[in-house]
Image 1 (cartoon, rainbow, N blue to C red):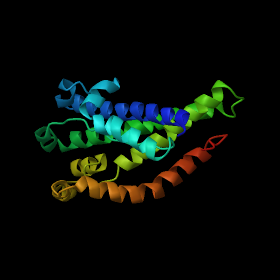
Image 2: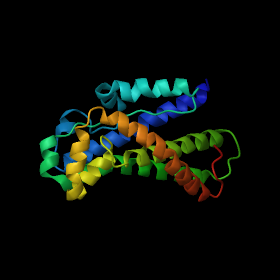
Image 3: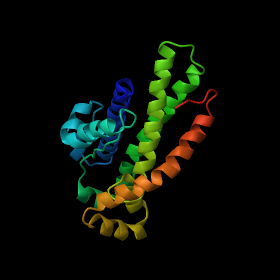
Length: 213
């Protein structure tokens, strides 16, 4: 087990997932749905999100770290919304769905900026910061791309359902399929590597000193 790497991945996941869910909750609140706000989800404190989804926020990430010997971490969470509000306000619901992945894009951009600023590290703390920023960059690209896949229960399905009226019936039909989340995970697991790796390589190539994973 690479304990140092495991700690970086776990902390990066907790921060990234918390920002993702807080973004959903905040935008829903601005759009008129206070369900997540009353549930304490409009916060950057990870504890309320962990309490709502302990398996996805703690157990699964730790399990993935154990199975990958500290080189990989993944999990999930979800913000509560008012289904009637989403049905009556499809446009706002679509923006709310997009807010989580966009928050991950923002975190990836911040990580990219840190890597750009540090450039070629001289050693010491710069190497550690560059390693943390590289992990944040890769993880948030994964979370953004994964969640934008237009299959329920992922955020991409909510965006499509809210913005494209003809696709709403199909998304709602898929939502009623038993164990759809398993089907979605299997499909996404096959698709993401073909998108995330090229995306990371492209973004990494823009750096004056590409990050060596």
